[in-house]
Length: 464
Ligand code: UDX
Figure: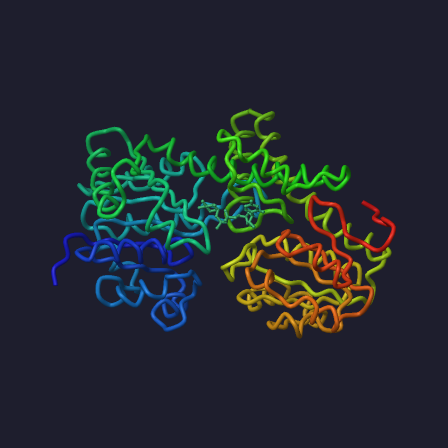
C-alpha cells in the first residue's frame, strides 16, 4: 500500500512510543516508524509486553502495529526513507562539566541531528519533540545547515504536554497542540504540513502556532507553573500542620476562585516524574545564563520546597515513632511517582526510602506496577528491602504504613484487617491524603496526614 506521508520518530521512549501510536491510529494513510538506538527497546515494542504501561496504549498498538505503525532497528535506512522526522530522544540533566546538575545534556540530540544529516538524501522536516532548552532548535539547524548539496531541512518545535497515566487520553484530546517554526516561507510551509497531521483529530482552535523559541520556552514554563502550584500548596501544608488549619479545606477555598482553578492543588510528599525537576532546573540554568539571578532563584525555590516536603515527611515519621526507627518495619504503599504508572523516575519514594534506611528501619515496599523499577532504583540497598506486591502481606508484621502513591486501591484497603496484622502501636503516614483518617484512627491507628492535624494517641513528640 502506498502511504500519503512517511513519518519517522527517533526515540522509542515514554513520549515517542505513545505519541506515534496516536498519530498512526488517527492517520491510517500515514506510515509511522519508530526507531531507537536500543534494540532491546524495539523488541519490547514489537512484543506482547510493551516497555511502557499506559491505559489504552495496548489497544491502539494492537490496532496499528504492522499495519501503519512499525518499530524498527535500521535507523540509517529509515532516515533515508522518511520525510518527516520527530526527534524524541532523552535529554537528561547534565552530570558533568558546565551546568552540571542543571543544564540539559544534549549529546543525544546532537548525535541524532548529525545522523539525520549524514543519511538524508532528500529534504526533511525535523521536529523537536523532546523537552529541550530554548535555542536547541538553533543548534540543530546549524548542524543540518552544514549539508552539502541541495538538501534542505526545516526544524520545527512541537513539545508534548501529555502526562503519564493519562497519556492516551491527553494525546487524543489535548488541551492544545503547539507548533513552533521559523517565520520564513519554508518554515511556514513545514508548519502547515504538521498542522495538517494533527488537524485529523484535534479541533483547529486547539492547534496553536508560534515562533520556534516561544514554543520551546512554553514547554519549560508550563511544567514550571504546574510544579510551582504543587510546591505552593505543599509549603502551606507545613503551616497548616502548625496551626490546625486543614490543607484540603484551604485548597478548596482557594481553588474555587476561577482565576486560580482547582486542579493541581493536592498537597502530598512532593512532585516526581521525569519532567518537572529537570525542566525547572533547565529554566533556572537558562535564567542564570542570561544574568537573571533573581528569576533563577525564584524558580529554584520550587525545587527546594519539594525537597523540604520530603524531609518534613520523614522527620515526621521519625518524630512520631518516638525518635527511633532502628529495627522497626515500615511498609511503603506505592513507589511510582504517581498513580496509574509504573514509572519511578524522580519518585519521592526513592528519597524517602533511603532516608528511612539511613535510620536503620527495615523497609517493605508494595506497589501494583512499580516493584521492578523500585528494585532497580534501590539496587545499591539490595538485601535491606523486601518487595511484596500484595499490600496485606506487605503490611503484616510492620510498625507503620507510609502511603507514598495515590493508587486508587489504597483507598479501598481493609484497614481493620491490616491493623490486626501489625505491631502495636500502629502508625499510618498518609503522604497523599487519600484514606479515611478518622475511620483509621477509630480502628486503632495513629494517623498522620499531610497538612492536617494528626490523629494520635500520643503527645506530639515530633522533632520537626
Ligand atoms: C507532567 C506534566 O503534567 C505534563 O504536561 C508534561 O508533559 C510532563 O510532566 P507527569 O510528570 O506525567 O506530567 O505527571 P503529573 O500528573 O503532572 O504529576 C507530576 C507530579 O506532581 C506527580 O508526582 C504528582 O503526584 C504530583 N502532584 C500533582 C501533586 O503532588 N499534587 C497535585 O495536585 C498534582
